[in-house]
Image (cartoon, rainbow, N blue to C red; front, side, top):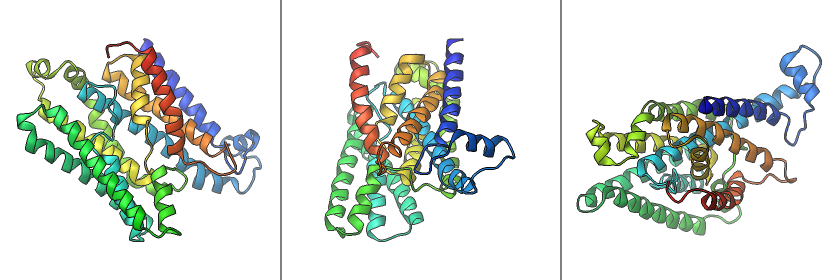
Length: 330
């Protein structure tokens, strides 16, 4: 009953916040005009359809999808690795996607080319990390080697990004690369969502369906195998799904940190460790969090602040606070 109430309340807050977000921005919309456009046939500003349908609605959908999907990916990784300090970029997918996007911007590719190369870079980074762990993991702890491989790939991609920024045109390419790496939802169009949302759904659905197996895996490999769980297949599936989710998100929004780390952690403190409730609750709370931060980013000053900066500023102190308040054992 408690978990059902949490899901219901979170969903209600998300819907209310989405309606509120329609009126927030550089072009203010009073509630009366918004109500007239959405629910009646009364008169309203003729610019309203363009502002709502072409600018704000795609951005709201993107904020919910990005925040929710990153939270589910983070919660799945934390369950698989049995560590609440794990985030979706642990295997280098974010750094790889950033390298792909930086390369595309350096080559003056169109927005579609940037998204495709970013997605390919994220998936490629994970494949390299997994390949490294397989080649040397037979004589070491598999999980530890996998994490270390991800750290190596992230560091290498970070160095390559720095090299690209160093050789990029300082008047044109360098600002574009820097701004993209900060993360933003301002340039997302509905056409981008048509492509990305199905990929996100392909990654989320298997994780939801196999959430009970993540519960078993969190007790350890021996217990999971004794209950008939194929731990190798389950880990591989989680890596594939979480990588698809993260790479597709980074390809359209840039690098948005901390969401996949702090939201699953906070949700777990509210709902408990049961992934059958934890995953959908993480999606809702992640959507609420990122939509709130996005509203803040486009209204706090005269110039829009990249959302990746705000998530870091907000996320780091919150995580320190919750670490101090949480129990010693996870």
